[in-house]
Length: 98
Image (cartoon, helix red, strand yellow):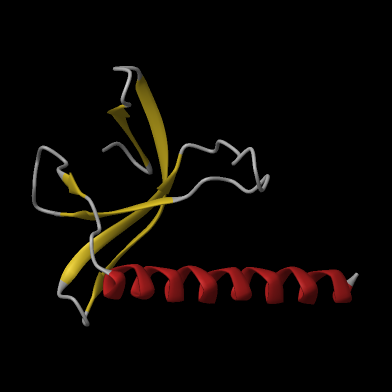
C-alpha cells in the first residue's frame, strides 16, 4: 500500500487501484478494518462504490479478508453514517457562512 492507495486484481485479472478512505480498529470486534473505493459509480444508485475489508496492519503482504458477520457490517455502517453526517454538517456550515 502506497500513501492512500493500493492495488488488487479484480475477478478478470485486471489491476484496480483503490483509494483508502479510512482505517480503524474496532474495540467491539478486536479487528482492524479498511474502507476503500475505486471511485466507480453504482449504475443503479449513482453513488460511489465503497468497500470494506478486514486488514492486518503488520502484514507486509497487505492481506485483506472478507467481512462475514452482520455485527461487523453494523460497526462499519455506523462509522460510515457518522462520517457522512459530519461531512453534511460541515458542508451546511460552510454554505451558511457564505
